[in-house]
Image (cartoon, rainbow, N blue to C red):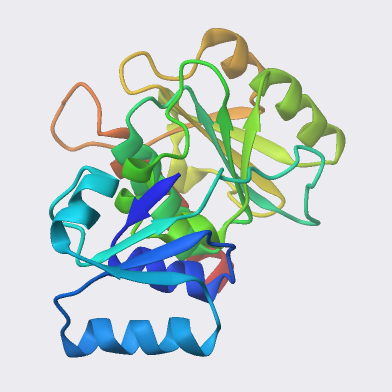
Length: 233
């Protein structure tokens, strides 16, 4: 997989992620020089190339002078469930921008795992990585074939599962605490009925003015930060 951007490279370096090759633009500035020096110090493979070469590699001119070949993205194992977890589950979220934004929020609030579905979902792509500002490398991403079965496995471990749904109880009235899993649904249709049935309870976000719904990444940010707030008070 080809990814790009300076923040993405920084996140890869923070997470000690494997990289096949790092391409830097031959037009340097101080920030880029510092990144090159760090890559040299770590003895990572890199090459200096013309801007046109980098644009061709990643099909994006605004690549900040950094393009990285990371090979195939490594998803986490379904069975690797941490103790007392905070898990974010996405039921067929299809927009890579939404996936990236939700992952970024999940990392910020200290969630342990993000789960996506194999079918009818956005996977980890260069677009999703960019939308996450590279933070997608800071958290395990699980891809499951059957989200309902995965939820059953979590419930067997005593993890309470909430689903974000407009018909749920207002989230500030719900005891949102670890161990917890929170499900967010598809941009258009929400959580699928069979997955919704697996949830222990449904929660909603109150709205002063009636609108159809919030963007899923916005909804996720609101609820995830509420879980964090409760942990910190």
